[in-house]
Amino acid sequence: MKYSAYRIIVLLLLLTGFSRGYTQDTGRKTVRLFLIGNSFSQNATRYLPQLAQEGGFTLSIGRAELGGCSLQRHWELVEAAEAGDPKGKAYNGKSLKELLGSGTWDVVTLQQASILSGDSNTYKPYARKLVEYIHHLQPTATIVLHQTWPYRTDAPSFSQISGGGHAPSAEAMWKQSRAAYHTTAAALQLPLIPVGDAFFAAQQKSSTAFKTDQSFKRGQAVFPDLPDQAHSLHVGYFYNKKKELDLDTHHASEAGCYLAGLVWYKFLFGASSVRTTFKPEIVTDEFAKALRAIADDVVSGMDQAQVRR
Image (cartoon, rainbow, N blue to C red; front, side):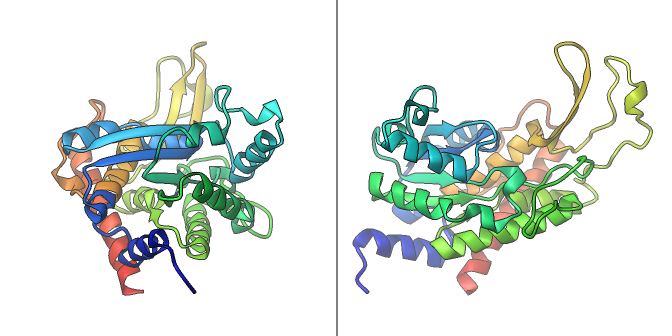
């Protein structure tokens, strides 16, 4: 089998597991990053620009994101746009081809909608079709899968899983989604950003785990009362504009966005997340320090595991 120079570079990146980060593997200080995702990719990269700037890197980000968007929907929008259907221009009036084709991108990321992330069947054939489409539009780009995170432990329900039904717990969701992401990454020979692993790792340590406030009674809560949500990596309980109590166990909190950003930072730039100093104001110094260490350990552990394969 003959490989182009691009294919050889991608295979080398896979063999090293992106171990030194994109910029070190390519000798660059700049990353042009394009995200094909949804609100989870927005969460994960919320603080990435600040981290990159602090580290002395130049980062530009392009986005094709729609709330709750699955791989299937992203691909169906591609098909609609290619057929001349205006519905294909769902990204603020533009198609994926128009956005992705504007300029040259170094790294392009894909992810599954979180509710479907535990069912590997939902990735097929859409992930492969999108990868082929990206290769056509951006032949020199490295395509990466973003492993999304499990919901908070007190979520009323979790992701869909293969064979029907839903995962019974946050841990089960993590295991199922992790397996689906790794299966897809292996089949398509794509590196993986292990954000889901970092969220799970934080929940496994007593010093960083979120613990449900058993004294809080939702039906008796009066504005502005909220439960103790220390160390929550998810939004959790909050009051909406009508001062009504809401619960979001899916999307990342400030701390969750920060942890995800640290993972992306380590993965893309190969720089130590432990040595960063930037953090959101709401995240305590102690918790931020712990999250930096978790991000560094998870990405480093993933790299070493891939190198040994």
